[in-house]
Image 1 (cartoon, rainbow, N blue to C red):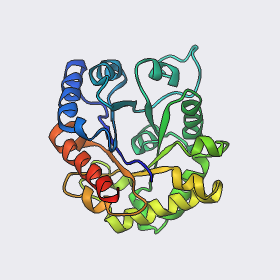
Image 2: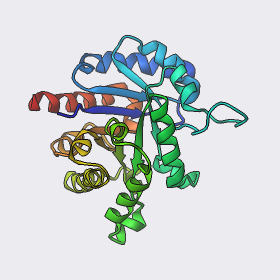
Image 3: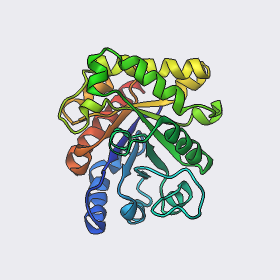
Image 4: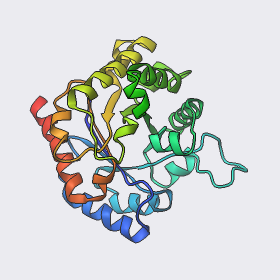
Amino acid sequence: MRRRIAAGNWKMNMGLEASAELARKVKDFTGSNARSVDIVVCPTFLSLADVAEELEGSGIAVGAQDCYHGSQGAFTGEVNPELIKDAGGAYCIVGHSERRTLMQEADKEVNLKAKALIGAGIVPIICVGETLAERQALDTMNVVRGQVMRAYAGIAPEDAAGTVIAYEPVWAIGTGLNATADDAEAVCKAIRDVIRYIYDGPTADSVRILYGGSVKADNISGLMSEKDIDGALVGGASLKAAEFGKIVQAIAGKCSDEA
């Protein structure tokens, strides 16, 4: 049984005090579910240590929103996995659609970052997803399969098994649009099939796959009814503790139903 995940990506929002306050509220609204579902919040780099301190002992983990794949050295402005871990980070998002589209981040960079995170003992949340043009061209599966294949190049099966993949269609990020549960499941199943092709059945059964893309309290239950969706990567809704709490509760409730 794969353990479910509710991950909140706070993106470039809130300063130190506001981030700590949101962390306290998230703890109040979600802490009781930490035994049944992995809860992760991903603040900005500047707030990561403060949020980790605020959440210490709560069972809620902290993650970063990106990283650099190199070790310490003359890389001005970059943050590597060791620094993230030192600040209290246990997870890190890589390959987010905003990084791919706005910063032109390539699959090779995603692969290098995932490897660096694994080497540092941090769980990578590897994001994949198609653009609206690719979706309209009926190329979703080819795009996503290719992204997964390149992201996992050179990663050993025992390391791959502990990773997380987030399917986040670019056309749904911050738009209010959302893939139907059936559409999301079809892509998530294809992702799991790619992992099975690269590795084997047990590895594919271990990798946790999330859906991300305008996830809200009113659509999470339908998504969580699908076999290959193990949780959600939540954007804007994670900035509202009560809303995020409802999402976590729905994911935790699904866990209870399957127990």
